[in-house]
Length: 309
Image (cartoon, rainbow, N blue to C red; front, side):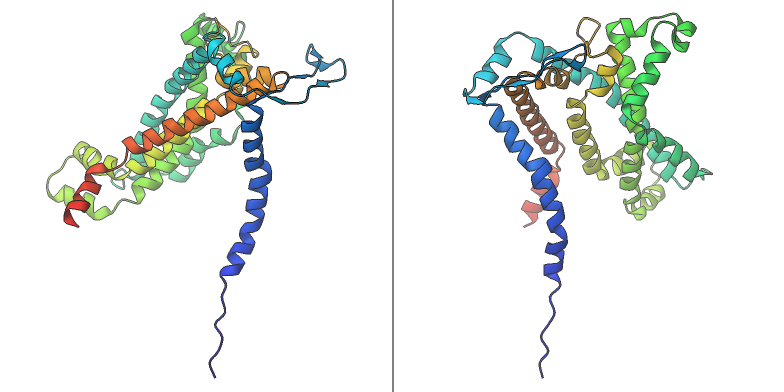
């Protein structure tokens, strides 16, 4: 008698249902709603004075206005463009030391010849800042670098009152928050490299620097591309650190004002314009992400495979 085979594939789909339900409700639907509101004239007056609600909110029914919100954003001055460059600059200031230090630490911890002791302790210490809220770091650094703070009393330089000083503080906070996570990712990538390649390189007389640049870097390129793209997308959404350091003012001279800070300033009033700004960030992030992924792809390897085929 032939037994009927049991298929367990359906249970995989059943267990995926909760994920898709949550994703559709809390991610996909708000995304479509944001796109819809970006093409509407939707102003909601919350009536806030001094941070509190003083009168009943007045809500206007959204009316379709086409691309008016987008044209207003790009023709109302250079505020959006300036905030975009502010965001990019502060991301670069934090990302360059982040990727350099993380790469050095990842190589050290994965090099068996160094025989580093208490690696588990050091890895935990490196990753620990990643579990602390960015707002806590912002308040801490504000109290340290503002006038009367411990660092200010030590160096006598008002860093938070200068453009590059304040940008440097924001970059330092972002570096401390994320270099541990980047180190773990790069360590995982390096540990996935075939050790026989390093052994062959040593037999051939390759130096440590040659091994690093000719073997390690090319083989962990996909993970480095992932780190770059995800970090850039997160950088474009930068808000809490510069907002808390400048009390939502983006001072000095508006050089710390980010795109998300403009969105937050409009979300309680001009929802249509705030939605248009969100869509612009979404499109810019997608374009930059795809461009970086394409630039970092192994085109030479694909051409060689085609020739062999």
